[in-house]
Image 1 (cartoon, rainbow, N blue to C red):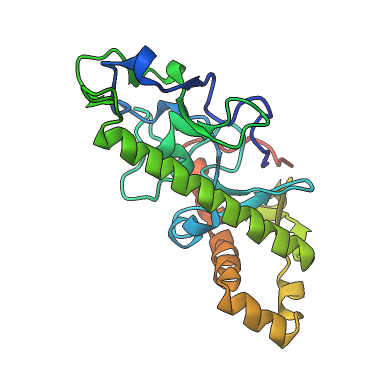
Image 2 (cartoon, rainbow, N blue to C red):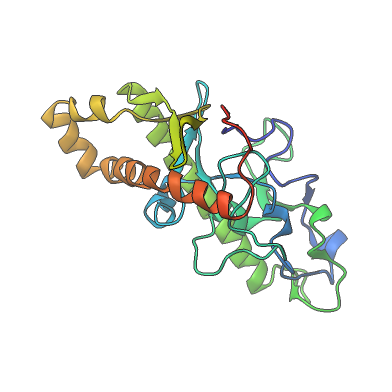
Length: 258
């Protein structure tokens, strides 16, 4: 059900170009007309700083494998996003993961061994270009505008949050709290054929309860426990997302294992 982004380029990104005043002087960045880039994406990467907000709207799980990543489930099946309507608009009032909000921008190393990261963008998104309208990217002195600086700051904060997320994952792995996830959802009229979802990881509640008191106290004081609890609380939304898929006619016709 949950898979990590492709190794060549991250989820959504089809190409990356470094933003610079030489090549992009006079260019503007405009808003997306809709959420079409999200429409067929069922799992969005998430950072731990977003868990409290995201757990109100999405189930939060972790990808399978030795290096799990937290993801917000916007659907339970590949290609299904129940929060994007037929007009490709994102449902109002729900939390939008920072990963999606930063697109088409991101910080990237132009060379693998380089320490410095550069602000880049995906030209295929169509929102950054020689447009008549939009936010100016560079001022008359070829320096970044306030808008560009805000984008850079957002991307830098996202990277910092990503580092905190990696530290969280390592701590959970050290405590051996991850377990293979499985959710079986039955319908009232056919309890013998549940829809079974696998292929993700979650926190083992039993192991969490059995941790020594001093360890739990430390997890509480450093904020890790609240992140774990947000994840566990969010799992109750699995059935809600399933019901939304059902209402939208996006549930497989037979019992499935993903």
